[in-house]
Amino acid sequence: MAEVADQAQHEFWRAPMPAPVAVVTSERSTTCRRCGTEFIVSSLYCHACGARRPNSTGARVLEVPGLAELGLIGERLGLTMPAAVAFLAGLLCLLGALAVSLLFSARTLLDWQAIQLWRIEWLLAAVAAFAAGCLLKK
Image (cartoon, rainbow, N blue to C red; front, top):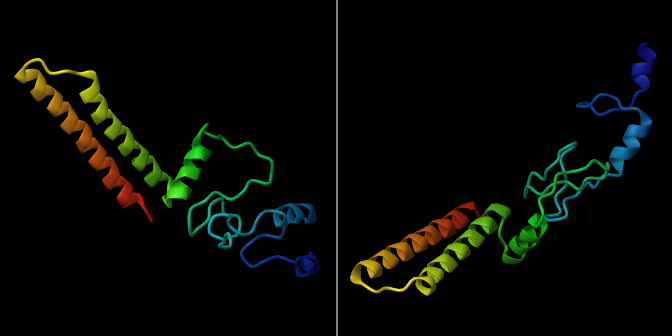
């Protein structure tokens, strides 16, 4: 039994693995596509930028439709995913402020005040979203 343990080649922090499993794990990507850093052994995410490690085992991963496109928009703008979501939420709030002025017309002073209040609320929400995007940026 002791002679088998001497012949096993393994790293000091991992248990010895059978040969077929070791071949499969060596085929996995060892560097991040986004930032080029080397992945930590058996990690699912990059420790530098947080990108998910490419899945080469064939296991199914839950994917949200449109999330990849949102990630591409964020990469083009130089934003992380949460910052890109906050940026898009801010843009939607700005569009809401514009829509208030297009959809509602003021006939009395009270109507005008209500429209201005709604517009202020939309603009405050846009400022909050943009501030959240600035805080969530790297």
